[in-house]
Amino acid sequence: PTTPVTERRGARRFKLRLNCRVGSPRSGGVEVDGVTTDMSRSGILVSFRDLAIPSRICEVGEPARVMVELPLSPSLTPRCLECMTEVTRVTEGEPGNWWMSFRIRRTRVVDREDTSPAPVV
Image: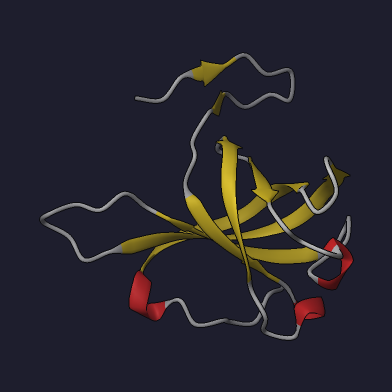
């Protein structure tokens, strides 16, 4: 079950811990594994462990693609939520641990086998 979190940012946030991958034009097709911390209709917060330099992935103001693995369903093929986003914040925790906030611009559900890196605009 998910728990709604009161948010001043305008959209109701839900604490969801789902595996995801993040890539951008800056990363040259390389995607980094992360875990969502919370999500709303308009944004995502992702945590990364053992990430040396997040600017190799993307910086504030740049576009990024976040591929969120959706929970498995016995009646559907494995799917991801593809989110075309803009980076709004990058925060360092303990050394190597980072959080990135993304503003969602566009989403679509895709089969997991159709998740090869696509151009980010």
